[in-house]
Each structure stands twice: as structure tokens, then as C-alpha cells.
Length: 301
Image (tube, rainbow, N blue to C red; front, side, top):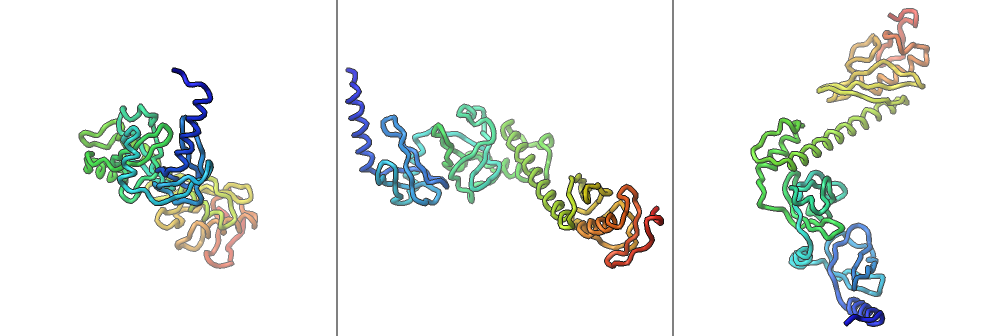
């Protein structure tokens, strides 16, 4: 027998009233909103200023709830069992969110095709290239636990390769799967980008401290080649060491031989330009560390 529309409304109202008198478990992230499905309808609850984690909550009305206590491990485990289990390979952590790659093709069935955020992970226990279990609630992936069935030696080997920036083609370990190699390739690329970004930040800062404009840089194993301009005119290439950002080659002839840092070099080049030096010519004499100049533009060679 089909219910009429009024019976359906009564049923929803009864469920709603019953829910408002109960407590419930929910994961909470940094935001303070929780979505709850009651009779097929979605209700949004606000929760003060909560700590991220798993909590037992009590509705206060149809739009607000309060935290009663932190959920126990057993309560959290029982809740997670309601959802699909998916296995992941951790790649990196950002803002306490664990970003992972699916462990196998079967895990891709749930929409995890590439880098995927896993929420509420125990960051202190998880290391790169371990295997973890997560649960998918049709919207988010929630950390469950580390999968202790995986081979820890494989994860340790991949971490060692990553530390040494070994290219994926040179990663040789029996039993390594294509998904693990994909995860490694992504982690390696991210590591390279992060290190490059840090180097650029430092080089840019050293150049801009002398009121010049950083253009770009290239590098080899021990040196950076830095391009920069002063008042719109690009200067000769500066080559500096990676270990101390000291000048190896300045593109000009400085009379005092010694250790120069990049900022000091750029400052001198700025003085040279103010005095009429041509940045396309490669010789200019300046006594390092003093205000005494030798020769003029006619003496350049």
C-alpha cells in the first residue's frame, strides 16, 4: 500500500524529532558545519569552534549541535565499517591532510584516480609510501588505519630513492607495482618542485635586497646561474654557489679578489649602471668593500 503525502511528512517529522533527542558520531574538519541525512533529507548543523577529529554530538535544535565528547576508537571503527574500504599510498602531507595515490586498479573504482586527499589521518604514524586503509562515504575519504599487510622494506626502499632523487626508470625492486611507481614519480616531481621553489625564493630575495629585479635562474649540481635586471636593463649572468650563494662569476672584472655574496654583487652592478656602465660590456673595476673606483668607462676591456 502506497503512503500518501501526509503520511510521508509525518514519518519525516517523527524521524526528525527522534534524531533531535539522540546523540550521533561525526568527523569534523576545520570548518564547523556537519551534514546529516534524515529520511533522505539533508540537514546542516553548526558546531561552535570545534577541534578537528571524531566526536559524539548532541543536536540543540534543527541547525545547531554541540560536542559531548571525543569518540572512542571503537566507536570510530564501528562508524567507518559502514563505508567502502579503499587502499592508498601516502605521498605528502599539507595542512594536516594526507595526500595519497590509489594502491591498485580496484581502488580506482571509487573515483580515486590520482592524488586524493585523506582526512583525519594520524600524521605522526604514517610515512611516505606506507599503505593505508581509508573509507569512502561517497563524498570524502576518511583515514582508518595503516595496512600492516604491506611490505615495509618496499616503502623504506622508495623513501631512500626519493631522498637521493633517483629517477623512476632507475627504481629497481622486485614486486614494485605500476601504481607504486606512479606514486613515486609524483612524489619525486613534487620534491623537485619544492626544492626549486625554495631556491628561487632565496635567490629572488638576495637580488631584490639590492633593489634589482630577479628574472630567472638555472642550475647544475653545485651552482646557480642567475639572470636579473637593474632599472629595466638585464645584467651579465651571475653564477653563485649552492652552498653559500657566493659569486663564482659576475660577468665583470672586479679588482678585489675575494668572496662576494649575490646581494653585494648586485649592489655593485647597480652603482656601475648609475655611473654609466654598459651592462653589455664585461669589464668594470671596483675595489670591493670600498668606495674607491679605478679607471673609467674608457678603461673597460
